[in-house]
Amino acid sequence: QVQLVESGGGLVQAGGSLRLSCAASGSTFGIAFMGWYRQAPGKQRELVARIFSGGSTNYADSVKGRFTISRDNAKNTVYLQMNSLKPEDTAVYYCNVGRLSGLHVIDYWGQGTQVTVSS
Image (cartoon, rainbow, N blue to C red; front, side, top):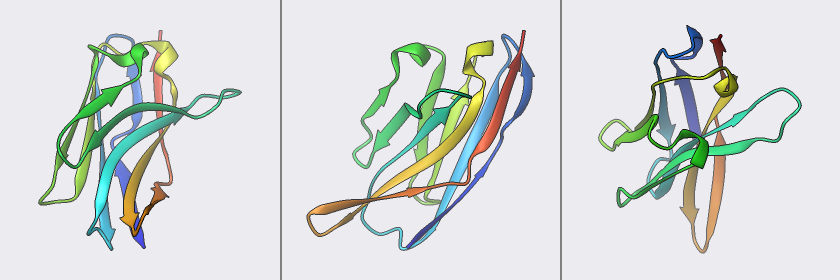
């Protein structure tokens, strides 16, 4: 099992910045990727950004150039630096970790942290 603890959400004005953190503990050996999803009211959960164990990253088109994902392997922690925030970034942000188990990837989820961007 992998436990995830998120922090860093809050209320910010449009154009501002926030930094989310997610610390993984427990059976962290074999983590293949760490990332962030978000879910706005009435919408499906969507991938925001992901970083793989080798360091490669991918981002949703809507956040490219504004958000940066990074990872501290020694601390098993993933960060999401969010700049130039827009009201449409308002959502609950969920940390997601994928751990290899044989030929399968097991997904783990954080409890979610609210990000609210006011106009």
